[in-house]
Amino acid sequence: MKNILVCAIVTLALVSCKEKQEMEMPKEEMQKTFERAGTVEVLDESLKALISATDMEVLAGGFNWSEGPLWIREMNALIFSDVPENTIYKWTESDSVTVYLRPSGYTGEKPRGGEMGSNGLTLSADRKLTLAQHGNRVIGQMNAPLESPIADYTSLASSYNGKKFNSPNDVIFSKDSTLFFTDPPYGLEGFLDDPTKELSFSGVYMKRKNGKVELIDDQLTFPNGIALSRDESKLYVACSDPEMAIWKVYDLDENLKVKSSRIFFDATEKVKTSKGLPDGMKVHSSGNIFATGPGGVYVFDAEGKHLGTINTGQATSNCAFDDDENYLYMTADDYLMRIKMNK
Image (tube, rainbow, N blue to C red):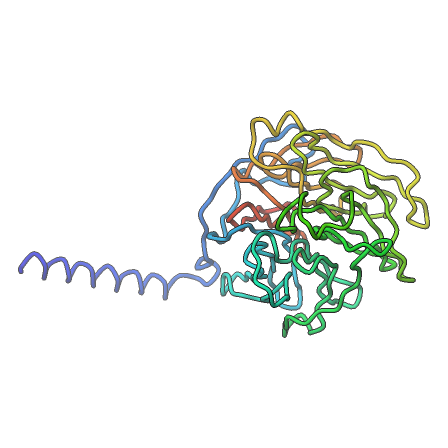
């Protein structure tokens, strides 16, 4: 009994001391700290101008498959998809993770499994949330304001030549609101052999402002992440095929038509020793490309030179910057991570 009493007194004293320290600690020193993970592999010294951090912060975990991170300045928050859970989560520095939107990608009444939720997320010019919806097999747009999300959607694109898309995966807008997106079969319950599959190929598409959907490429087995260069002269597309793990670049003319294309970077050999495949990507204001691939996030210059890799230790699906490019946020399997950027 005496030992228990002594322990209780010591515990109370420690708690009291901790509370006193917190009361006296300057506010800027009370910021939340996160578990550190991963490493940064520098292959070219120019990477240090972009990133000086040597590891990253783990912000949250426990997701099924996290995807499609998108920074929302109106809420000072990051939102991201959990594809199998048909849910979009919101992360903020103060509140951590909360449910933002559900259902996010499949709104049908018949129960189904598989990759049915939203995947890639982006914003239109008028700040409407636009989603690659696996389950609904469309590019959807949320009708509600960003600050008051409701699972009510308008379809922006659902078919090509009268045939329903497989399961749109990633989506972006050009400056003139042309829509670019990829359409692999990942959201189909039966994958390549799904009986509801109507197209014989996986496509890369664009939808003009006049509503016309145009096919850009039908030769990539599993087109995935998609991004435009800052001047919109180049379109980048990832192919998440372990037998052809590449990023492809398309040269565009002033009307956003493809002039030529080539392999930007080939990571097929790396797939054999590292987790993950070419997936989502974002273009930094410097013109460098941050692209998720085997092992983590690859950093390329505009010509495809590999500057280094942010090694997350996880199969990493996608990434996004906040508006000021203070951080790069990464969805990595069941984790949400970030790394500090240089200004």
